[in-house]
Image (cartoon, rainbow, N blue to C red; front, top):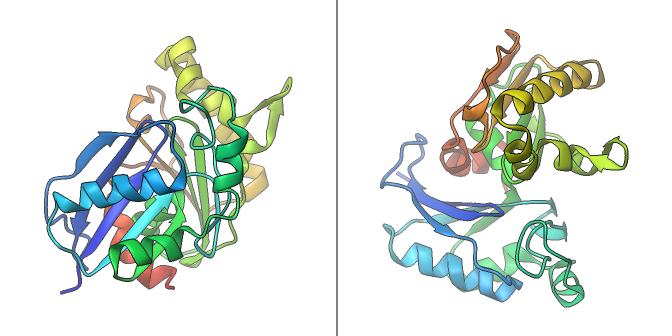
Length: 246
């Protein structure tokens, strides 16, 4: 039995648990607030601190927000900001995160194999059935996305940063601040409209809506859209090694 420490790194919290190779939780998930300001070294320290209170694991999966390519941070939101989401970008933090080899640094820190992916990709690893085109959208601090074709992970696209309207991005119109401003009902109708608008772009066979705010949706979704529990970000940590590998 191979066990995997999985950490879902969000803008507001770091959630972690150990899962076995059947995607079963070996312990209760823990959550700590994401500390700010957050240079890479502080994130590594925080993850080691979380792991110290959980059962030992054979390997580690970390889901980070933003564009992660082969374990290296190309760009990440929130962590480059002075005090977290929706605060000014700190140029020094921006420079520290750009090109940060998260996988290599975490492997040194944990002294065990580490897989670093976009957080929505880890969500998707727990959900996809391997049939057709499957899109994963996570609704939380912002918008996360991952695309799988016949169970294989497609190259990551930062849909969240695509322009939506009037200078706003998908991240801005679907994120937590906008949900708070609109209220759940109006925000849910916006999610519904955006899902309808994205359908002809992706022509998915299945769309999964997850993340912490998926449970706040109060509108009906079509049959090809499935609402999923936020724990997918943890449960996908083991299966990611099979679907995505090293």
